[in-house]
Length: 192
Image 1: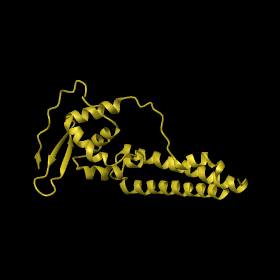
Image 2 (image 1 turned 90 degrees about the vertical axis):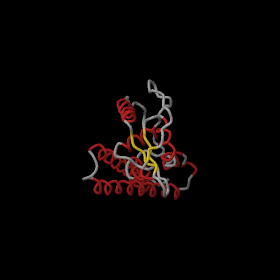
Image 3 (image 1 turned 180 degrees about the horizontal axis):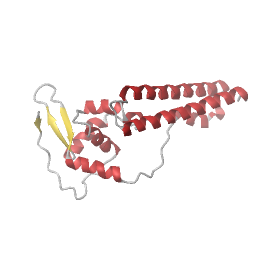
Image 4 (image 1 turned 180 degrees about the vertical axis):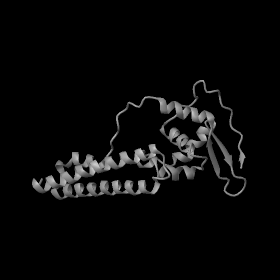
């Protein structure tokens, strides 16, 4: 692989481009080793994609922007599909470390279509409400079970912090699963 010439980058006495969450996902994933955009997509799908949703198409655009900012290098395969492989630079590691050191004070955002539907269920039929509760219960149960299987698969490979994120995901899903189960029981006791 031959490194492509990087565009000139101003010294980072203040980055010329503000980094966003996707920037940090790419930088973080590259700390595990160089990767193509497709490999980044696979890594994200098996890890942070469980709790951080975003358009995976960004994993094809963001690395190039990080190359231009001097945070990532790019090598291009000679011949074939001319795949681009990205690697984090020392400046990229520094940017990631600075972000990790920043306070994280914002509230957790919950975007759950089931809760939104429940909120507006005054206009729903009793059968619709029961189906909503049953579907959401099963969905959260399946997701929690999936986290348990994933943990068993990667336990010997993942680091402590990755396993903690799976633990929280599993706890969250079990808590929401219990909410919907309790709601189904309530509907049986006191029909709508």
